[in-house]
Length: 312
Ligand code: NCD
Image 1: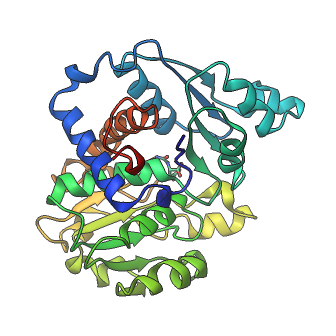
Image 2 (image 1 turned 90 degrees about the horizontal axis):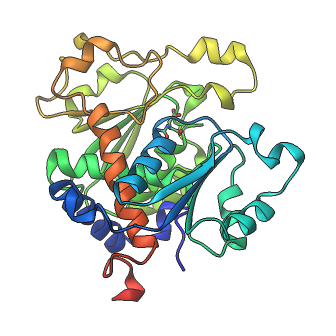
């Protein structure tokens, strides 16, 4: 049985096959509408979410399956002190697959060790968010045809943003990637990502403060929200929250075929005036999230063969 806790739990070949499956689903959704008849997905969300939880639920329903779960730890037995290990043991009897979001780094990993069903990490603290990465990769692939060769600017909260940590881990496995890391000093990419992920890959990277300096070199601009909930004090958040605001004037410096991505939710970092620009891909990206999650559910339930290595 396989889980998806870290983006590297899937090899590059497995990831590519999963993205190709998502594209097949986009092309012919009706063919997949009953693949999960009789199956149940549990969504165990201990931390706020709109897109991730609802796109998981939409994905399972579009496959013909059913969904149960909770949207906050406060109204589950976690509030009584139940451990993640106990919760998942029990859920293993109630559902066929589970997606878990937790404020504690590592909680979905612990769950996977006690589960009798596949567990998907739907975001753990400031750590990883592998299904957002699949969504991002599908969006990059659909906007440019391939992932290799991309110059990607990651902008905003690179310190606490789990989506950028997972995306970088996944992208280093492709060829000719160039990383442009745009952040204030206080929100720079963590040292462990630079030293253990980017540097060993040999891909070039640069760290800059202003997006205007680098805008014309980018193929992808990946904007992120300053992660208020991970700050130790509100003053720092208030000082840093509006570090970057993408406006039509700044976007005018970008290439004509630039794609602007954002995992959403957006706060102030992309002006709503940018939404009408054809290069604004973030709502399309959110929609892609449903299709990659459909592909992922089918794969982990063993309903689509040939994606994971041991199945050949
Ligand atoms: C992201 C997350 O939860 O990390 N949201 C999402 O899943 N689409 C990004 C964020 O909250 O800023």
